[in-house]
Image (cartoon, rainbow, N blue to C red; front, side, top):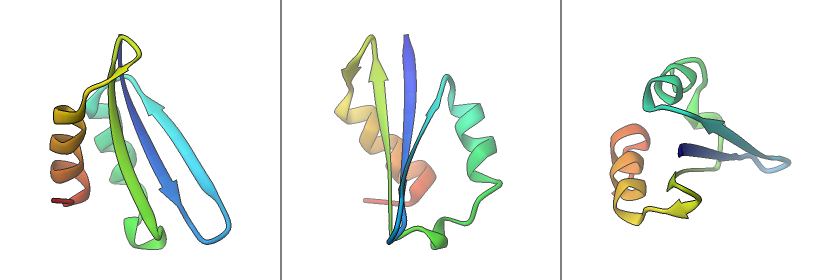
Length: 66
């Protein structure tokens, strides 16, 4: 099973959103303003194991992180 976990944090709150595909993640990201959050991260899990290479790739692609 593939999961994309989006972590968004403000000064007062931390949110976790789980998506079954990159399309649903991309649709959700289009509805929010990332500048409203002081921290954001995407984790990519396959069969309950974190995949670091895909995590890095998705962060770079969707959150413009190096």
